[in-house]
Length: 258
Image (cartoon, rainbow, N blue to C red):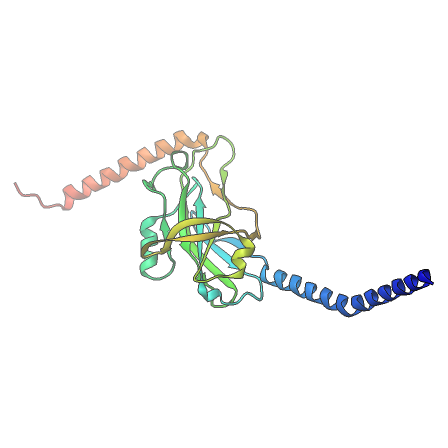
């Protein structure tokens, strides 16, 4: 009799457990799935794309940053791009000042004792801070613009070209309040000016992102060493000719008084 009662109780407990799973299991699974989907939506990736515009020795570096869909209130955040300029390129600080006055871009040099006339083999890598602006054609996008120029390179013995690699920048973000995406992709803090015309220092979040291109490679034309003698002779000849013409013109048309 006791064994029969124990068996009945065991069956009852099994039926009760099955009923509980049927009622709670799907709901719990749905809640977990919804939570995971919410996290995935909140942590949608950040994509960065670098493009080089124009031809010749004077180029424009265009940086576009796109946040994933579903991210709201980006207006509450600011984006700062820390761009590293290789030795083969330079940024003119006077040009940046002019562009700031015309409200074309907001960028400033970080490096000190910067020589824009030095060739690439005598220059050092420099840093530029660019305050990105929201793209008017894309609600989830920021973009930044920076003019760059080629430096003079040593002549080569064979190939009449060399290459300069522009690495991907550091992406810094600052928000006025807690922002979910910071918890997803921020991995360190960097001290930098809060704004271009502001001396206050803010603690920006350095963000992880996915780059469309690993690096940007620029092809730079250089001279050939076999042309050194020819270039020197032609330059000297033109200098003598032009100096002679200037002296002749001065003595012929100039008015001298003793």
